[in-house]
Image 1 (cartoon, rainbow, N blue to C red):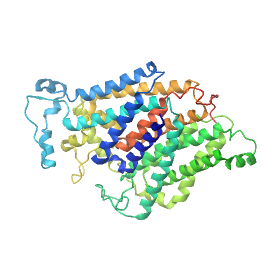
Image 2 (cartoon, one colour; image 1 turned 180 degrees about the horizontal axis):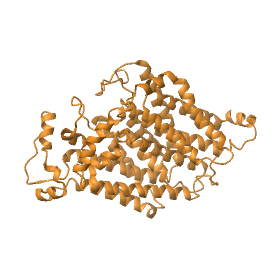
Image 3 (cartoon, rainbow, N blue to C red; image 1 turned 30 degrees about the vertical axis):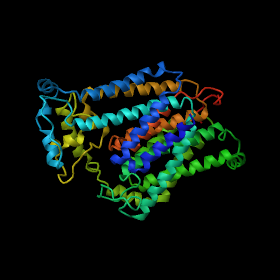
Image 4 (cartoon, one colour; image 1 turned 90 degrees about the horizontal axis):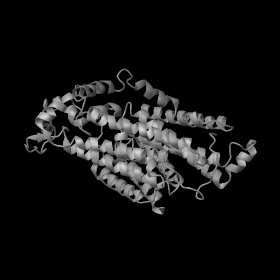
Amino acid sequence: MRWFSLATVTLIAWGALAFGGEYPWAYAPLFVFAATIGMLGLATPDRSRTEYRALVVALGLLLAAIGAQLVPLPASVVEVLSPARAVEDYPALVRATVPGAPRPAATGSEPLSIAPARTLLGGACLAALSLFFLGCRRGLGVVRATAVVRGVTALGLLVALVAIAQEASGSPLAYGFWWPRKVESLPAAPFINENHLAGWLAMAFALAAGHLAGDLAGSGFAARAGWRPRIRWLTSRAGSTAVLVGLSLFVMAVAVLFTRSVSGALALLVVCWAFSRRLSGPGRRLARTVLAALPLAALAWVGLAVVGTEMAAASWSDLGGRVPIWRDTARIVGDFPLTGTGWNTTGIAMLAYQTIRPQVHVVEAHNDYLQVAAEGGLLVGLPVLALLLVFVRQIRARFRQTEDDLRIHWLRVGAVAGLIALLTQSLVDFSLQMPGNAALFALLAAIAVHRPPPPPERTVGAVPCG
């Protein structure tokens, strides 16, 4: 299993540095590689197979529900299940928008999805990430999560430096040579969109914060009496590693502020809040001071004037144009309440429902929860809800058990904090729909629920929260 950590970090790096996996040449190998890692991970022995059965069943139900949207049904059945399906000729709308789009053959039956090809693509991507999540969950039961998190922390530092350099250059070319499809503003390399970049950095920040908290707690740093022993510890190898991780956290916080993403800054604050909720014991005050100091130091470095100007320029009345998009998406939800328009078809549905900015085609709802309701209806929405409930229950079970040592405990806290941060950002953005973000999200989910390796590979100890 020595390959596991390297392969996983390489996958996350490709997803981040290849423009977030936005283009087909980037996301196709990403999902193939993710599925491969997942299948290899599933081949490892599993000492807790029955414990995760409910999670596997919930994922299977979700994929089955998306598959049901692709099953050809008689027109009379489709009319009963989804009356709005036949109101618009969506293939004709696509041909009018995309010259050369093929005309579907008349077969006398049709699927529930208004764009079966897009639903098939979205379902295949979700299946690949599900395999990656399940394989990582099992692989982390053999290989400690620490190695993977260290790789992601180093990658987070690299991504943050690239983002800062891109912002400083003022160039419309990402990496200095790539002209992005989005031309409304300067790119926020390597993710092009500043909100997507901020969401990825918030997740990496959470994992790195868990790494730092675990190192400090595992070494007894907070329990050392006086500052002199603590400073002496900082000069050791473990202390030097902690200093480097702390520096990485600072640079990532600076990069988030440089993106000028309000939702990204909110996600960063959510990470700090989630950590503060788990803190107790003698090191509680010190840890909270560090958590508060990092964003404040980043804010001071970037400059209050820069952040204040961006906040003042933001359109708060309609949340940057999102409210009208939400209204249009809500109309889709109302017309397709049972079966939805089909997974990954919001952009097609908007050809008939979009009422704002006719010069720009809106392809996302800018709210992942509303988009799931529009694309899946109750058919997909109920399995999504069941999966969420099972996942939360599994996380609670992991925290109740005492198998974690201090470092694994705090890595788990970091993973959960990163998940909460991105789910919060998903209220106003769609960072989770970027393949690079989705891959890191799946890794965080695996870290959150995995069972750590048994002794003697780990150090057994009580789990304080300090």
